[in-house]
Image (cartoon, rainbow, N blue to C red):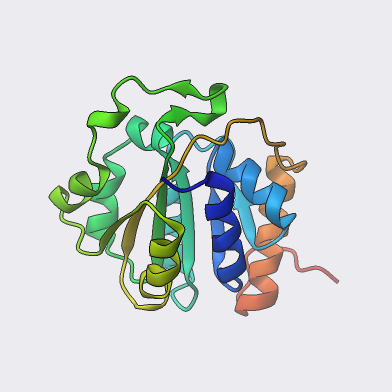
Length: 200
């Protein structure tokens, strides 16, 4: 198993231009702690399992950009039907990372009682996804990340990590601020208007 923080530090070092969507709990908190990014990351902290589908909308509207979505296995188990939607959309610029720490990171890392009997990668393949990865070491992640991110085609990647073991701090941004920061970033870097009123 990977150390959660080491895994995210490697991802942060390598994902420099992609748009990032994080979900509730550890993925938002740890990405914020490591990066302190306030524009190209949408911290979807009230996502309730919808981070990858929210990211799919961004990917549809920005086909020239690579969109990376993170959620935890707690969120995934609330809505495994996301796999069927992702298969139907089959967006070549959507890269979905599911962080499997076998606990509910948003609620003091309560253990998921059924976690060791679930094959998330197998579920994704059964849903018809073609490019599926399940990684358990930093070496694997380092070797395969370019294929996952840079080769066109939707990917679903399970990151098998140890629980964080501590409480990370939430990003100090409320929903409207996240929306406007992210939207203005897209306007500056994508050439299309997001909001009705442009900044002067």
